[in-house]
Length: 196
Image (cartoon, rainbow, N blue to C red):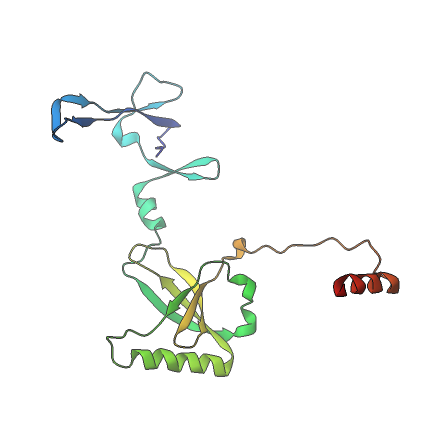
């Protein structure tokens, strides 16, 4: 990991420290490799940068963006616990199938909770009869970033399909065709080829 420093300085790791194991499998304290990390400005490679002048940097494209610890905490989108929160419903034709570009998961009722399977099945039936799709906020585990997902009815549960963000969907403009449509002789030749 590269660390951004105030005034465009960078860190380079020069060595690592580890105790080497002997033939018996125990670490030999006499045979160690030491580690040293230095932080310096590119313009002044001989002068070390003080710890209070260092902040973390994160890659964004080809740039290294400095981010203080306070801003870093605010930027984290992770959740405290795993969550699936139903937000609402939309007609199924408003969620095109080509939005389903990520792997899907299946949601079923908790077998240890009484009535959970029936509640999920009732939601499936209601979604299918009303021809709607559920929209939910989903985080699979603690600390994960939440995603907006579509909940589609299935036989014994719901398919959980992560939806793409707007910048993940491209609208492609295809050039107009410059060739003339096939004539009758070309269509007959193609049909003869298929039937052969």
